[in-house]
Length: 189
Image 1: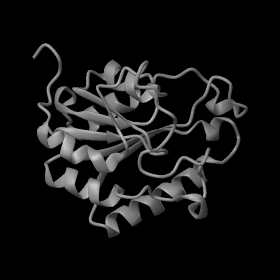
Image 2 (image 1 turned 90 degrees about the vertical axis):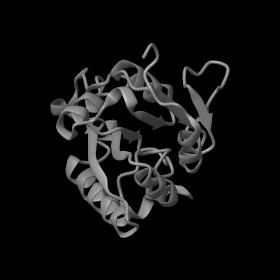
Image 3 (image 1 turned 30 degrees about the vertical axis):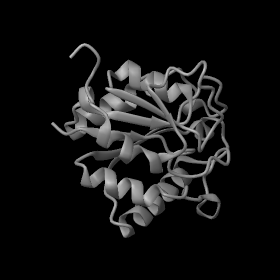
Image 4 (image 1 turned 135 degrees about the horizontal axis):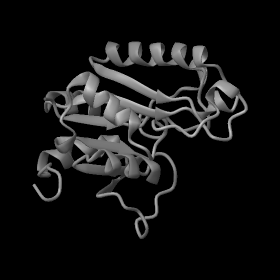
């Protein structure tokens, strides 16, 4: 089984510009390519897990989301980065698109996307890490039994006094150095 770094998309991989769904609006955060290549060289499988409630809210279609995702993966591949899987939740309980209006098991803070990725990709959650920009990401990591939940300041505002994250860093760029020095295992092991 492989250890993984689960990456939230908006705010971690790209600038969070509220409901990014078009290629022309997508901007990779500085240092993402270098950090991802370094994490891969450290033996981590990279997986993206992203809530995409804009689909349920009727702001963009699932097809548009998939086109953007294909483009993003192509840009990452050009940089030598292999993303093992992209898991997304198109649901929201207040959605206007009936097919996606639901309270599901995959929307973070629930662990559905992480558990599905672990099963499909053979990932060792007890030695894996999630990097997110919201407390919902941290809670998803906790709910899935991940070893470490890291919050970045490159997305939404982070309050260190109330955060349940194990570590808070400025951006994904800081994560490889952190993981080189951290002992990664589930508490109690």
